[in-house]
Length: 204
Length: 61
Image (cartoon, each protein chain N blue to C red):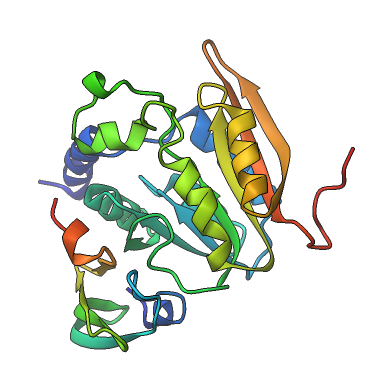
C-alpha cells in the first residue's frame, strides 16, 4: 500500500467521524486570519480536521488545536496541528492566548433526533443550537490575555442575538466581522473583545 | 506533543500546573508520557503525541 492509499483510507475514515471543512470553516478562517499577527499564540477550539488551525498557522502564529473527539485530534495532528484533547478550554492555563477561534456545533436538534456518534456531536447544538457555544462564551475569557480576542462562528439558526447577549453578559463587546448568506441560514463571524480593552469595537 | 505546550496547559479539574513524565521521546516530540497535576496528583496520558486533558470521568470513548 502506498502512502497515498493509506492517506486516502484514513481520510475516508475521518470523514465518518470528524466534521470536514465547509463554508463555515472557510468564513471563520478568513476572518480570524485578518486578526492574527505572526508570533501570537492562538487556540482553535473544536479544531476538527485542523483546517482553521492550519490556516491560522500560515500567518506565523503559534497555534494549538483542541477537540473533545479523539478522531478529530488524530486528523488535526496528521495535518501538522499541535493538538490537545480537552473539553472546550478546560485544559488550558489562564491568560495564555492572544486569539481564540471556534466553529461550534450549532444545529438545533430535537432530543428524539439525537444520536451519540462523534459526527452528531460535531454538528448538534442541542435544542437551542447553543448548547456548546454558551459554555464556551462563559469560559473563554479565563484563557485570554489582556487585549485578547475571540472569533466565533454563529449561524442564524442558532440565534445571533442570544449569543451576543450571552457574550455581553460574560464581559465582552461584540462585533460582526464577516457574514455570508446560504440557502437556509446566514453565517456570521462574531469578534468578541473584553469590554474595557482599548481596541474594543467602538459603539456605532 | 512539544514540551513547550507545558506553558499553556493546566489540570482541567483544579487549573494547577502539570508536571511532565516522559515515557517515549522521538526526535521532535514526546510521543508517550503522562501529565501529572502538581496539586491533586491526577494523571493525564499522552498517547501518540496527543495529551488527553479530559477529566477521568469524561475520558471513555
